[in-house]
Length: 211
Image 1 (spheres, rainbow, N blue to C red):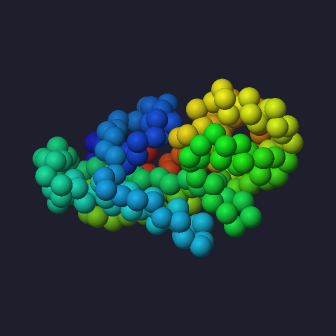
Image 2 (image 1 turned 45 degrees about the vertical axis):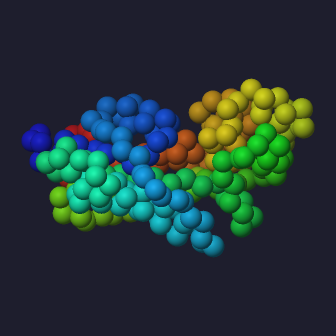
Image 3 (image 1 turned 120 degrees about the vertical axis):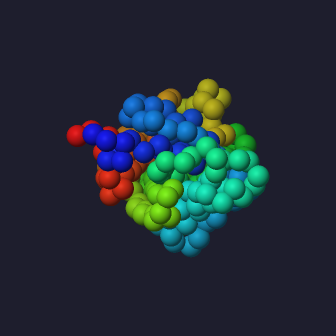
């Protein structure tokens, strides 16, 4: 397979260690450039929210590479075709967003709210072609059912787990897996990177991980 057929450089527009780890597991050649001077927004519609945020993160990095915006010299580093990918993941239940908790008390409130209920994990993924500016996006939804949690379990979990960088205050990749009764949909979407939708978008840019 030629370079033009499938081995374009991928740029991950994210600071998430879990997303980085998933790309490493997929054996991808990628760089990380975090979005700069960008604030996520929550709209009334959760699907519009993840599309807006994932595409804005990807565009932020795409613009800095292609225009030299910010004076970082990034435009000199990527002369060949590359793909910038941005992601956004939210936890959503009863018309409420549950982002990263600001305190242990708030984390406990989140988990009490989730206890015995099914919430949605919704992700957006957007990919920009670095040479043409063409971009595509998609969304993924996973339903996550929490088992009934006791107050003691919640308090112990919050003490043991690093909950401050996790939307919804739990990490299904770690100790948070013990809170979950079942999931319906993509597991990796709950981690923060919907692999199926991501791979499908890559194929539309003529990038194949396998084959």
